[in-house]
Amino acid sequence: MGPIGFKELVVILIVVLLIFGAKKLKTIGSDLGSAVRGFKKSMNDGDAEESVKQLKADAEFSDTTKSSEKSDTKA
Image 1 (tube, one colour):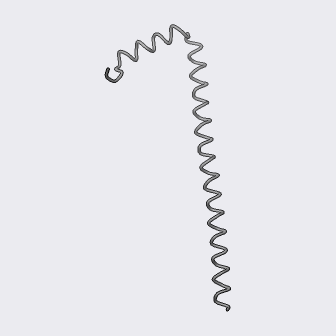
Image 2 (cartoon, rainbow, N blue to C red; image 1 turned 30 degrees about the vertical axis):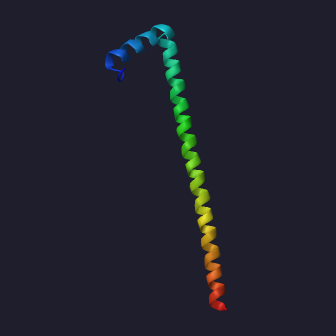
């Protein structure tokens, strides 16, 4: 049982076309494409939110470090 070849893919596509029909395949394809776009967008939004949280945490840490250095030099 090796990898799927070109002939097998053609047979699978023909069977799927016969089962669902051309109109239904177009609808399924567009729905699948929008689902993938939505998934990618949510992943990118999640990454952006994590980056913002990390930047805020770094800025707060930097501020506390600078304020503790100033108090050390005054004493």
